[in-house]
Amino acid sequence: MTEIEWWDYDDAEEMAAAVAGDIQFIIESAIDARGGAVIALSGGKTPVPIYAKLAAAKLDWKRVTIVPTDERVVPLGDPLSNVTMIAKAFIPKGARVMPIVPTATADYKAAGRSADALMQDLHWPLDLCLLGVGGDGHTASIFPGPDLDEALAGPRERRALGVMPEPLPPEAPVPRVTLSREGIVTARALLIAVTGAEKRTVIEAAIKQGAGSAYPIGRVLADVELPVDIHWAA
Ligand code: 6PG
Image 1 (cartoon, rainbow, N blue to C red):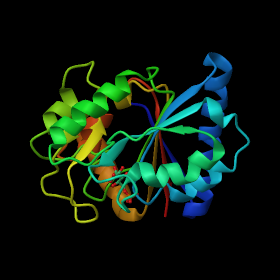
Image 2 (image 1 turned 120 degrees about the vertical axis):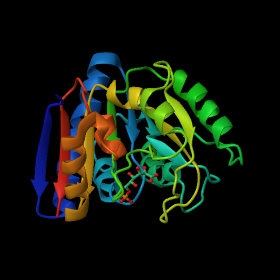
Image 3 (image 1 turned 90 degrees about the horizontal axis):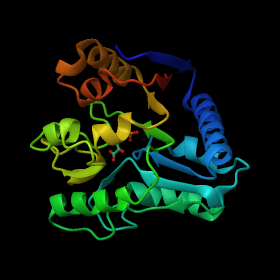
Image 4 (image 1 turned 180 degrees about the vertical axis):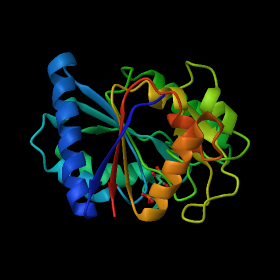
């Protein structure tokens, strides 16, 4: 049974300040303990105010490596690119922000293998994985479709893989690369940040359903060994 704690806020700004504070603490602790921090940050729109607040924190950013939890297979600089959004916030601070899809390719599986090779060079486990959740219950880019089983239960050493969502999500209808469940749940800290009543209903149902859930977030969170904090704003 996964230990899950919900943190509720009145609005997205209040949530952003709290989550940014938690991430700052995680980064500082990792730098104190190991001389550097390696963190995975979610894409999408919800975390944008969190990253704005976090980027303003006084941290030794040169010791911080950031990867996206998942990426849309699009060229760098594309409005859909998660790492481009993350880089805008943290490159000016001096952090190392790693693109995981260096060139867009029609072969999403090959993009996944290349992302996995890049990920293998990082220091594992991750100090933090910050996840978002879609209204359809996906998290990172773990979506229903032909790659779902591999994402959830592929070889343990596989950190990242290519995913073809089925159906393609309307907000970004492109193939993806994503951290595997194993890469996510072995992080030293696991945070989720979401807004809106609809996502809360989906996540609560998914948690109840557990490993048999139709929602990827339910299957990712089932039987996780570390405590999970879910930050939620109305
Ligand atoms: C992606 C994301 C994804 C995101 C959710 C929520 O590339 O789509 O990383 O997992 O966290 O889709 O996105 P929003 O915050 O935009 O609702």
